[in-house]
Amino acid sequence: MPDAQPSILVMEKAVRVLDCFSPEHTRLSLSDIRRLTGMPNSTVARLVRTLVASELLQRTGDDYCVGLRVLSWASAASAGSDLLVAAEPVAAQLRDVTGETTGLYIRRGTTRVAVIVKLSPRSIIYRSDVGQLMPMRVGAAGKVFMAFDERVLSAVLVETAEQSPGESRIALERQLEFVRANGWLLTEQEREAGLNSMAAPVFDAGGAVIAALAVGGPSFRLDRAAAEEFGPLVAESARALSRRLGHRGATTEPAPGDTADETA
Image (cartoon, rainbow, N blue to C red):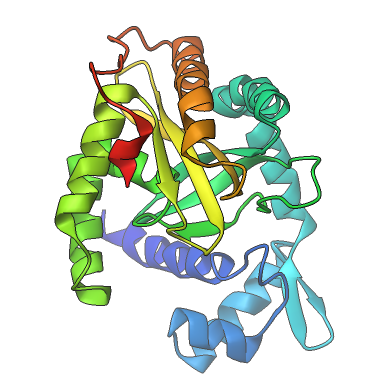
C-alpha cells in the first residue's frame, strides 16, 4: 500500500523520539533528542511539536518529558498483560525467600528491559528500575535469552565481536550449556564489580522464551553457595510461571554432577 508508506515512516520516527526517554533520562532537550536519534533538526522539531500537541510529550521550559497520555497507556498495558499479572506475585515471593532484589526482563533487540522490579529490603542491595535497559551479553538474564534463542545468540555474538573481540567464546558456551541443562544460571560480577545475578527462562505456550526471571545481589551474599541453595527455586518459580502462561513442554532438570561452579 504505497499511500500508507509516508504515515508508517512518520510513526517510526515518532517512536524513535519516544525511545530516547528512559528512567535514566526522563528530561531531554531538543539537542539531546537530535543527538540520540541522528535525525535532522527540522524533523526532530516537527515531530516533537506533534507529540506535545498529542500529549505524548510534555514541555517544561527547554526540556521535554513523557506525557501523561503515554503513562495512561503504560498502566493499561501493565494491567492487561498476562505475563506481568502472573509474574508480580512470583517475583515478590522470590524476593521474600531469597532476601535479594528480583525482577522480570523481556527482550528488546540485543538488550533486555526490566518490566518488574522487587527491591530487597536490605541495606546493601542490587538496585534497578522498571524500564531500565541492559546489555544482553552480560548478566544471567541476558544469557538465558541467548541460551534458548539462536537468533539472539547470533546477534549478540556479532555485537560482542565488534565491541569486545577478546571475549571468551568457550566460557560463554559453558554458561549456555549449564542453563539449558539446569534451568538456571549464576553469573559473577559480569556487569558490575561486586554484583552477581541469577536467572531462569520463562516460556510461553508455544515454547519460546519470552522473559527471564532474575535475582540480583551483592557478591558477598549471592555467591556460589547461595546459588546452589536458590538456583533450583528460581528455576521452579520460572517453570511455574511458564505453566501459568500455558507452557506444557518438558521442564529442564539438572544433569548429573552439574553444579553452580560450571558458570565460572
